[in-house]
Image (cartoon, rainbow, N blue to C red; front, side):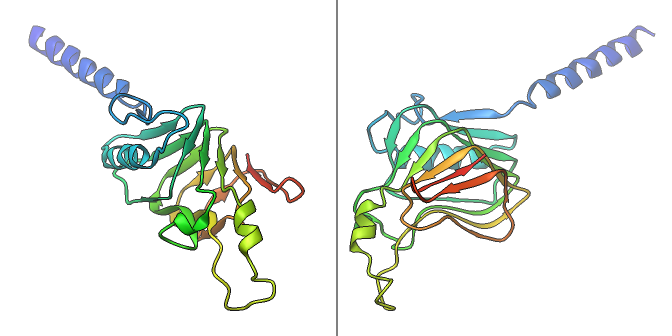
Length: 195
């Protein structure tokens, strides 16, 4: 009887221990592990945090805290091992000169991810004013492509909410279903809000 009680107690302990790990692991780009600082280039720190979070066997969250960070360009690619969220609380700022991008048509790209959430109340600032002044696509069919702020390709069971795409060089683009919530667009201020 004592053996059964000990076994039952051990099983209960293991059950409680396993449920305590159900919370998402947090990968903060400003932590000592990644070293990002406001007003600096966050590209490498964000790429490393994404890589670590995507490889996590349990739910994970990449966090960009309040502040303004420079982001040259980024591709966030899956598949990931578990659900993943990118929580942008601050502002990610593109290079003002689109010629600094290695891919002329995309600034931030999310690809091949299942159970992805982009949230946080933050802003993707495409700094599009310079690109608009250099663009002649309205009169030249062979014009140089303008980068898209946010591109979503091959995402499943995913959602985008509470994010602002500001001064995009061109409107965000999604290939395959993404579940956006409460999209409001204001071309007067050149903003796209996803709530």
